[in-house]
Image 1 (cartoon, rainbow, N blue to C red):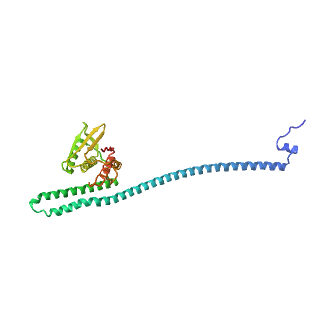
Image 2: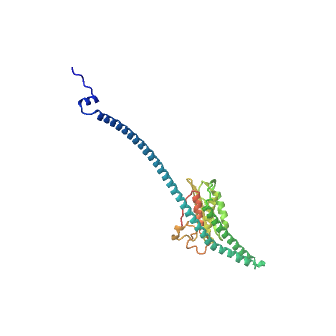
Image 3: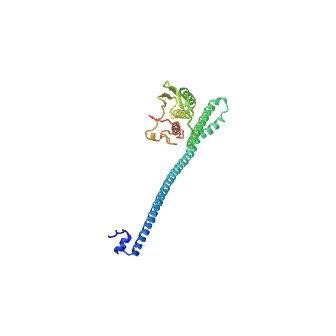
Amino acid sequence: MRKPCVLGAMDYLVKGTISPNELERSIRYSIEHAKSLAVIQRLNSELEQRVKERTQELGTAIKKLEQTNRSLYEAEQEVRKALQKEKELHELKSRFVTIASHEFRTPLSTVLSSASLISKYKTTEDDDKRIKHVDRIKSAVSNLTSILNDFLSISRIEEGKIYNVPSTFDLEAFAAEVADEAQGVLKLGQKIMYQHQSDDKIAVLDKQLLKNVLFNLLSNASKYSSEHKEINFTTSIASDTLKIVVEDQGIGIPEADKAHLFTPFFRAQNVTNIQGTGLGLNIVKRYVDIMGAHWITKVN
């Protein structure tokens, strides 16, 4: 009876297909290969983990770099804005010197000449002449005050020192009071005709800013109109909208100059010898903007 065959290494030995040494070397090679493969797999896994971590680190670094670039860009834009504002302020100061030296000269010369003439009128018969020159001095001083107020206003606006502080008040009573006050700067025979044209009279605005706007518009209407002319001034409130209209019978604004109506220091070509700084309407518009309102201009 034959014995059953034993499978495995002994079977190969019996058959004589491989020597024991070769088998041992083969087994050792397989074992080393398996170990090497395990090491390679481990190293590959570690490498993949390191690549993943490095990728995350690079992603974080890129985000920080992008954020830094944005910050640098924003900082650059802020610097550009500051430089532009500084440039505008420098130009404003240069224009101020030019306008001031020109506009101050006329009223100061008037004051000087009238004061000199007054000193020569010593008798009661000269009272009318003295009064005439006193009125000239008052007018010149008023012009100087107006010019200084314009420069002061534009300076405070540029420095961001004008604030909007709304309050609730009776618009009709307030506007009538401003109109009465403006009567003091009108030319001979001029008159402000004020009328409130709605039942609603309650407004919520910054009273001081609104007063500056109204007074500037009314004084402008007087300045560029002839003597004995009426100035129509109306207010109304409808659907939470306050409407102010100042209409004069003055020299108007040439069509070509309307585009520059609110440009600082700009004066229309038809103003001839009428004194002014060219700042009035620019100041008015900026006050209106500060109050969050809208400006609509109609020039006939």
